[in-house]
Structure formats: structure tokens, C-alpha cells
Image (cartoon, rainbow, N blue to C red; front, side, top):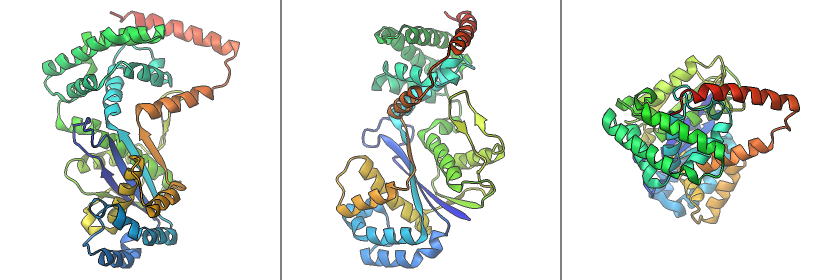
Length: 372
């Protein structure tokens, strides 16, 4: 049996451009023991030592957390629990969301298959992202959330027109062509894209909170390291996203049997280890595991924000970083992974080049029929 305790920080609702909270983070604490049972005696002593009813990191601050960090590390060593952190850069998410919907080759026939269903999507995404500034990203995101078609299209069209006016700045001619044709088709066929969210449930599904929660589930499946292992996933209770989180976890369990191969060279979505038991939602005031993961997440958040930490907390972060699994969804991370991936590709043979040219010719003939 495995226990997973999930907490979140950096939530700003639909506002992705709050300068004080640029990143949404999920922390996950995992253990083979129920932390409510095995750590309760020690946690009660720590609360008494600090004179608090519970360990809430933001209220305790760095110094008081450093005062109890050795005791928490001793618990961690004794019961072998692990901490993972999954993050989403919220500004970047607005641009990534625009690309994912506007340049979806299944919706936009002016887009090549390879620029959406292979690692070339990352190349075109990064090229497109260079044309955005914060104000334009805000308009693209506002258009996503605007339920009224005409109002959404007015914003969307302004974004497309501005990007088209900037596309000449790209040095790569092929990228200029693909981005120009994709944007022109999208601007002329807005309704076919389904770009804007009509209902609140649709809006919740595209928020960074749910994108990050997908990473949480994948991380839990990886930690379980085998199918049919029993697990209890305890998520901090809050009103906005718990229902959507529950629906996502249930869907993932239903499709767990077959790994999803999105496209050649793209990550495989492997959910075979997805546990059967539904998510449990609890208040951190009633669950010691959630109380602890709040402390871990807050400390790591300060570290990742490059805040100066007391030596005890520096040691805390260092020891956990040896076993932690971390990932961030951001344009910078996508760029770094794509560079690494392309640098590791084997040298193409003459036969591979020939087949590539044949495929490109067929793809281009199809695409050009839809270009405006």
C-alpha cells in the first residue's frame, strides 16, 4: 500500500499574469505508511514546541521551519517518504494553450501533420512564442475564456493579425510559412477551431491547475512502479478543482490498459499503474500528511524563487533533491528538452532522407489546398 499527499500553491484562478505568483506548483509526498498514524506523536510535539495548532508553512516562516527541519528529516529517513514537485509557468501556459488549439492539425488543415504530431511541434511553438509579448498573451488567454463567440473572435482575430504582422521577424522561411498559413486559416475559420470555452467546466479543464495535476498523476504512476498496486491519494480539499481532479483521475483509470502514443518521438502517456481507489479530498487541518507536504512545498517554492534560506533549510532541500522528481511546463523547459532530443537523433541515411522528402511532398500538397 502506498499513500500520496497532494498540495498546491500559486493558484491565482484564471489570472495567469499575477507577477507575485508566476508559477503554479503541486507538491506530492509519498510513503508506504499512513503518515497520520506513524508521525502523529512527533507532529504533536512539534506543534507544541512552536505553539501552533498545526504546521502551516506560510505562517511559520523560514526561521521557525528551520527550527524543526531536523525532526522532519528524521521522520523522513525513518519512514522513507519522498517528495516530488510539479510546476506550470502560467504566462507560458497561455501561449502553449493558444498553440495547442490554433495549430492542432486535426482541426486546422493548413498545418502540417509533422508540426503537431512530432517533436517539430516544439520547434514551431518556440518560434511562435517569440512573437508574443505579455499583452498579446493576455488577449489570447482572454479569448480562450470568453464564452461569447463574437467577443472571443474579436480578441482572437486581433491576436492573429498582430502575430501575422510580426512573423517577418523569424529568420527561418519555413517557420514563417507554416505560422502564416496556420494563423490565416484559423482567423478565417474561428468556429471550426472551438477555441473558446463555452462552459465553466471547459474553463476548469484548461487551467494550469489541471495541466499540473496531470503531471501529478503521471508522477504517482511512476512512483507506484507496477500495475495493480494499492494506493490512496489524498488531495487538499478546495472547492474549485476537486470535482475536475476526480473526473480526470477516473478517466485515467478507465484508459489505463493501453499506453497512449501521441506521435513518433513524443512522450508516451503510460497510465498502467493508475490506482483503482478514488481520490480522497481532505482538509489539511485534519490530515498530517497534507500538513507535512504543505511545509515541503513551501520550502521548495522559496528555494526555486531563489530566496536565501537558512542553512538548515538548504540542507533540507539538498537532501530531498537527491530523491525528488521535479518537472516544469514552461517554454524554456520545452526548448531545452527539444534541443537535447534533436541533438541525440541519429544521422539520417539516404533512404530515410528519400522517404522524408516523399512524405513532405504529400503532406504539402494536402496542406496547400487549404491555405488562404
